[in-house]
Image 1 (cartoon, rainbow over the protein chains, first blue to last red):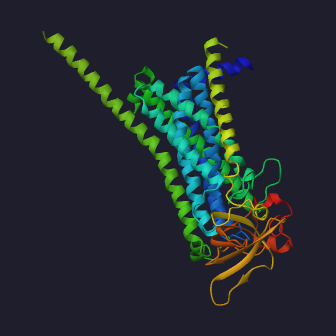
Image 2 (cartoon, helix red, strand yellow):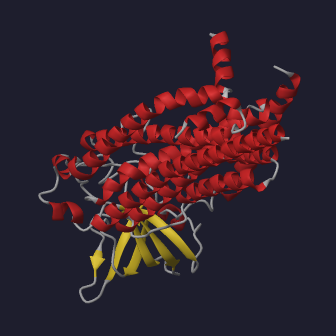
Image 3 (cartoon, each protein chain N blue to C red):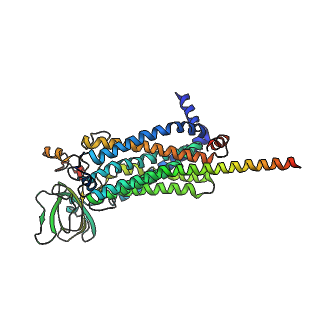
Length: 250
Length: 69
Length: 153
């Protein structure tokens, strides 16, 4: 078991191995992802019943909740990659960390924007400085900070270290976002999907939401792989295998 | 199907503007997120192809000039 | 583990723990200010400042909504199932405003303990269900009359 993990770790550390294997997986992942997202959107928009209080405006939940989930989960991936970069100086971890940041920033942006659009017809306002929304805005700035720091240094290693430290410091924000609706009085409602209890959503509405969430997780995987592959090509362009790959292209 | 016709579906009982604008913004962002690494990859490959061809050409030139002497 | 890596691991742990402690202290100090609104109990205890711009929140008491016939003036009571506060407002209420639902109002508390609202926001809960289902349930779970204080945080 341990030797298998060690082997896997060394393989994952090899950009070339990752480039080859991800190239084989990518079309299938993308296909399943597109299938899930299209099913989820059509089901959520056209077939799921309207809500007894909010009517049709609640349909925004099918993109708002998945985008928020990915924004938070993506931060953990980025922070773990940052820690690996700092401790083991693994080339691939740095590539992953840098690739995570723009995707995470975009997902947080989507969560904030769809939330604002949803807030207008239901709450009566686009924006309110409550604990959940404010901590989500902080997450957005953390992602932007990681992007900015990783680009700010002419020396790439220095940029990696600085952005990894910021990513680690920012992990504090994640549990605060999760618990903000329970710890403080806020306008945002508490979680609908719960791990330990039954969800407070009717099954007819819940299934498309679960499909959308799995679709967004796959979308995240696809986007991360795309970004990592591009970053690998850019960094390894002087190696033999990239030269061969480039010349094989028309 | 929850809606009787297309107009109903687009209006969403008055909430259409909110629902559709949210979905459109998400779609545009996702398309951009997929497109941007692919475009960058394309750029890197053409750049490298050009560089490799130039190096090859320069090497040939050198070889050519040395034999002519 | 290699001693250098062990040292780096320690640095990483130090960053995470240090940041957590710092954040915990900040939030402990700010915990009152992190609340978006005051519940009626806080107002009854005199914790909410009079004449300052604040927010209050709670459930609209059933049967307490009085609309003025000639204007958009409306008055209602909100409760956290311990205390009640009267709210006066002039303007259009959000679609989701109704008796038994949660609201958050911003405005000022006057000397008589009546809240003069400038804006009323509807606060919805985490329950989603089709209308047919809610009709068959006499008391929609957690929506009409939540029994615990947890329900309208």
